[in-house]
Image (tube, rainbow, N blue to C red; front, side, top):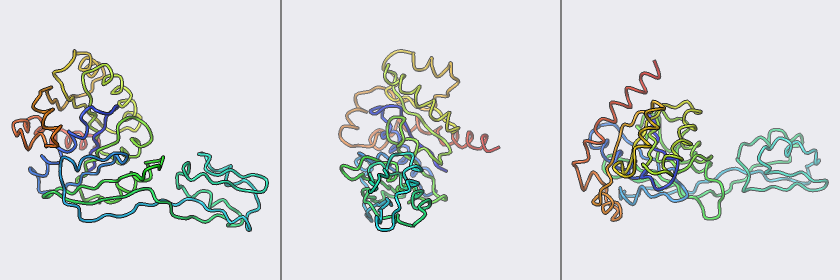
Length: 286
């Protein structure tokens, strides 16, 4: 089972919910739980869970390299590429690695086999654990413009037998789509502010287009007005988690402390989630 924690904007408390949910479930269950930190531009789940790192590896992707002696400049590779990563000129072929999505299509269409694939470094993947919880995160190489290939590499580290929690990047762009792929359920974290509501609407459109069952969790739920809850009621979106706006929670966060470890009384907020998510996933499969 793969459960994604996402948000339309940054700063809503997505990582707070993801780390505390992973911590709570690993206490309650005998299942192996894996937390994937797919916010690879700035992974920070480890700051709260403080895992012991067991391994580290470089992540790479394949990009095209042109043998100009074999190339006939037919242009089939540049015609195929929808991302502009290859440009075929009269007497040269230009490759733009930062635009390449590593699909391998150019090597397949080249009639003279003038294109081979070489490795390009994307970043680093680290694997660690805290008690029964495994933490895997990716760290994108500085200057590397595209994070989806690294997000794919991070997700490949988990197996289908695991209960997987994915801490997605913020927003609704390509990295988020890549992180959401394969998820059985999405918990959208938001806050009761105008910006939170605006970006939640965008996130709702994304998960509906992807046809993934979802619900909403509200962080700082006692802040602001009722506009957020009114929207969820109109759209028939269930709200399954609320975390109040309290100073002690903010202090714990600023000190890198897990909310549920420092204040176990908030476990009651997380307790109903597992049975609800299981029920929703089962109903969708039936």
